[in-house]
Structure formats: C-alpha cells, structure tokens
Image 1 (cartoon, rainbow over the protein chains, first blue to last red):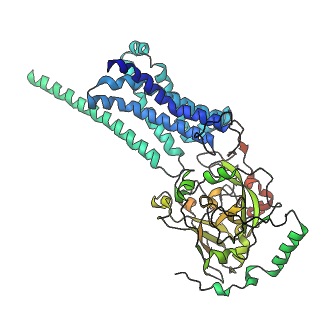
Image 2 (cartoon, helix red, strand yellow; image 1 turned 90 degrees about the horizontal axis):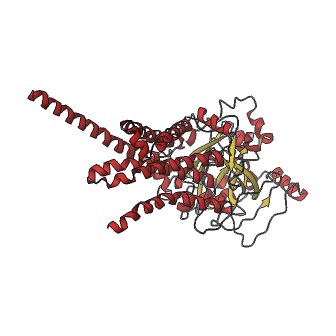
Image 3 (tube, rainbow over the protein chains, first blue to last red; image 1 turned 180 degrees about the vertical axis):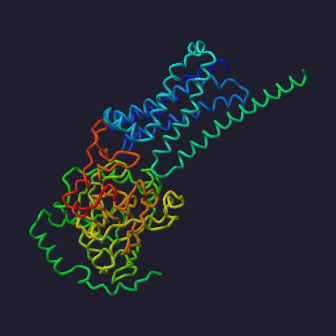
Length: 217
Length: 319
C-alpha cells in the first residue's frame, strides 16, 4: 500500500482537472484551432463552458463539505488530506466560470458586468460567493493556518455561506426546470444539517458534563 | 376514430380565394424577388413525407433576410422543446421515434368551418415557400433559419373565422408516452400559445413544415409548427394539434407559468429586459467564440413590417 499511496493525490488532482481540460479541447475545436474527435461543445459553446464551470464549482464545494462527515463516519482522517485540494478546485472553477462569463459571454465589457451585478440578483449572489472565496483560497496554506490559529477555523466557516449563495445563484438563473438546483439544495441541506446536528449534540454533551460537574460539587 | 364532420364543407374556392390565386401567379410570373419553383428529386406530398424528405417549394427572397443561415446541425441539435426534455440536446435525442404521420388538427371556436382535419387536408391547398428568418430566443441567443412553410393567414381564412374571433389559440399534442418531457410538470401540458387575429393574419406569420428544403425534423416541431419571427421563439408552438378561434386572449404556457417574466405578446424588444437578464444584446449561435454579442433589434429586425400592429400600445406593459 505505502508504495502506491503517494500516487493518490496526483491522480485525484488530474481527475479534478478533467472537466476543465475537456472544455479547453472543446473550445479549441469550436474555434477550429484543433480537431479532436468526440469532444464538441455543441451549438453554443460559451453556454456549455459557463454552465460546466458553474456546476463544477458547486460540485467541488459539495465534495469539500463531504470530507468532514466522511471522516466522522469512517473514523479515518485520510479524507481531510484532500479537503484543501477540493476547496481550491472549487475556487479554480469559480474563477473559470467568472472568466468565461466576463470574456466570452459579455465580451470583456466591464460596464455590462457592473450593470449585471447591480441589476440581476442572481449575479449579485454569484459575485458575492466568488469574492468570499478569495480570502479562503488566500489562507489555504499550512502557514496561514498556523498563523491564524483558531480564527482560521472561524474564517473558513464562510464556506457554508458560500455554498448557500452558490446554490441560490444557480436556482435563480434557471428558467423553469428547478430539478437540478433542487438536488444541490437537498445535498447541501444534508451536509449543513449534519453539522448543525453535530454542533447541537456537542452542546448537549458540554452542558451534561457541566451539570455533572456542578452536581458533584 | 377521427371526426371529419365539416371537412366536406370546404370547397377549393374556400381554400384559396381566386384573386389570391391569381395574384400569387402574377407574383411568381413577375419574379418579384421570387425564384421559380425548385424541383428537387424524390418529391413526396408533404403530408405523407417523413422527416428529412425533400419538399417542393418556392424561395421567397422578398421576405427572407440575407444573413447566412445557421448550419442544419446547429438548428437540429440546439432546441428548446420541453416536451422532449429541458436540455437543448434532449429534443434531438428523444424525439426520433415521435410519430408525426398520421396527424390530425382540430379546428374549433368562432369560425364557420370547424372539425378535425387530416394533415393532408390542412396542407394540400398551400404552395410552400422558403423563408429565411431570424430567430431570437427569450434566453438571449439567436439563429437564422431557412424555414419552409406557408402563411398562417391563408390557412385560417379557409375556416371563415367569425367577427367574434379576436385571437387564435394553438395547442401542442399531449402524449406523455411519446413526449417524455410531459411526464414532468415543468410547464402545464399541453403547451398553449396564442396570437391576436391581426398578428395571425400578418403575411410574415408562417406555418412551417420544413427546414433547409426538407420535411421538418421532429425536434424542430414536426409536422406543423408556428413561426412568428418578430416574437421570442417560445411563441413558435410545435407539433400543433389544435387551432381555435377565440374571443379573449388565451392563457399561454409561459405567461401562465411566470407572468412577470413572459408576456402574451412576447415581441422581441431590446428595451424591455427579462427580469433576470438583459434583452439588449444576443449571442449568435455559430458565431466566433470570441466574437462580440450582437445588438438585439426591435421586433427582431422586423419593425418596419410589424411595429404598426402595436401603435399606441405601451410595450413595457404589454411585453
């Protein structure tokens, strides 16, 4: 086992890059700069790029939020080794999503972006989520974690709000068929519900311990 | 099985008024921007033809735009047709076994001639034309499509609408067995669309039966669909089984689903945004990936022809 274990992280890393690679090849096919069979982004490549990056941002946020419950369920800290990478991939896809939106969908018109941000609530939410991801990505290093100590944990709880904003952003931009955003909302409710349940249970434990102590006194 | 109660009442002169017949001849003879009828091999009557078969038609250059049409692949793989699924690629995938022959259309409401007619009866008297129209989706993308069809007005006149006929209501087939999207309540089924009588009679309003000179593919609305080029694409109801003359504006599907976002008129209007996105510009399908968005034109570029229909109306209110 120990000989192959070092391979796991690079393998997961490459797997996380695959959706972006597919889009890259598809985009090159779309501008006819390249011809790789089987990869086509269809009649509206910009939309596919935009939506794929958006979905993978949400997917990686969800995956990141799965790591702690998985640790608790399996009693293995193994999962936490991937948490930072998944979180950073969420940021990576969010940035790509934003880049496609601003460069390809809006042709780099900053005025259009500003108009959208103030006029369209779903874009306001998306921008808020993206901006909130920046401090998390910036403090993702082990050094920042050490330096910030307990406030690092508090800061990184922002990811819960970001995930809610992200799903909300998706929900509000869907034309009519809300089945997919609903699925994300349910998944997120489970992941956040689990944390709430765990938190309340630990509160009860603390108060029971407290009671036990006062009892003994 | 099918009612043909009033079919016998239709005489050829009902179908095509003689003056109109003559004027059409004159148009063709005079060559007013209309090329001679195309003859393509293996032509079958449109009512009998299966998807993809060649049609006989005349190119109507006068009512066509000069922009390059989108590719057949784009037009047949990028469709909004929720009866077959909400993804743009779903219709192409799930409509392949959809049965469009035999097909009946029920004509009802405020007209002298009503009843159920076979597709053959519906199509027979109408010479087909090709018209290259712009298509602007409410989702802010656009295409250019070479439709084959005939003016809706010519069809409607055959049924002699009465003075009470102020609107026309259209319905799509309801058949969840064939249309998997109808098993999900994304919209109220069947799909309903409508036009004011003057919009329906406008010469630009087309009943389409073909695309790129061939019988309409299922995913594009076969066997019979509506095209109203100055309105958002969702007005173009597909797989029509019912046409009804009514006194009041029908409750149309999208307006019924979200009346703050979609109106009955749904005229393309860059000045009136969708509540969630701008309608000022559009992304043209098939354009360069890095190309600019195109400005959206009032009435999708057909303002000269149709703006008069709405004079005096507040288009912000009647969006």
